[in-house]
Length: 98
Image (cartoon, rainbow, N blue to C red; front, top):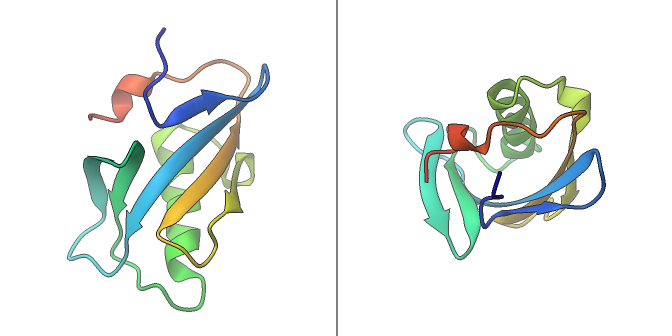
């Protein structure tokens, strides 16, 4: 399976996702690709780490993972985030309709 442009395989069980976040949106949803990143609109505001927590929980739910398998690696205070997911088998990347 071909990886989407926003995903890099780091090891057998770790994938890196590049995310672009728009916090404070009317609703949380995927919004296509922005600058080679998966764009996510988030209802959560960018205060008190709320948007970062929503990213982790949303990606875990989308990929059917435990939240502890999804880690924010870079971009804690930026719109551009780097997420590492740990997963035994490669997920169906088609869930990210881009």
